[in-house]
Image (cartoon, rainbow, N blue to C red; front, side):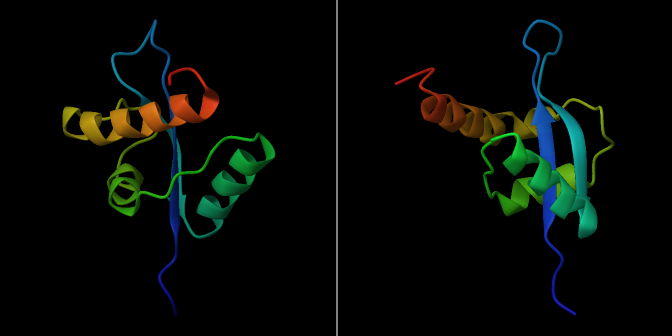
Length: 87
């Protein structure tokens, strides 16, 4: 049996949250559903396996811990560039 892929979804409300929150995470079927819903909603999917593994171990609804701020910020900057929010 092969390694089952994982997926995690974050949401950041700058007005209410100090950091992005984990809204969904899982492996196998749950990962497939998270990825399918993201694709249906035209949400970019970024593969970052080490980050995903840490996020999967967290409880949904929790803000990411400070040690994940740098890598998460890099992802948000990348997404903002894709969106055209920053150049």
